[in-house]
Image (cartoon, rainbow, N blue to C red):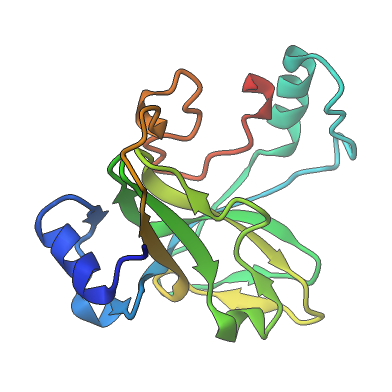
Length: 193
């Protein structure tokens, strides 16, 4: 069962669902809460290596990732990040979200942005029970236009679904919780699988 706007407000008020900064009611609609774009972006520097061979050892993959995932951009609030056609970029939400072990979150892009060619997540739109932190966005510009992205703009919506029972292995207690409590863009940690 998905939480309604009324339930989202109640869960936030009762601190069952933690969102920082606490959202104003204008950001909560029907079954979602709007999240805004943060000011941190990472682009890929592929002049050293055009191939990430995932069949290699963890150590070799780690070395390759350090070479290609290293271009950080901090965009002031009154500036824009230019997302060129065909470009893939990691970014972050302004909001931090912390889920209890009986709630799963679902990140969805905004339809108005999708109609301009902006994809918000490549595949990972589920937010696991027990997960917490800023959401890393996986932007892809599928249009033939440059898209100007401004920190603070509405970028996505998150809905929440109550589980049939609390998770016994929530994200925050897993040994391999690679992305828990992230407060900045976190690159792929596939080398830790």
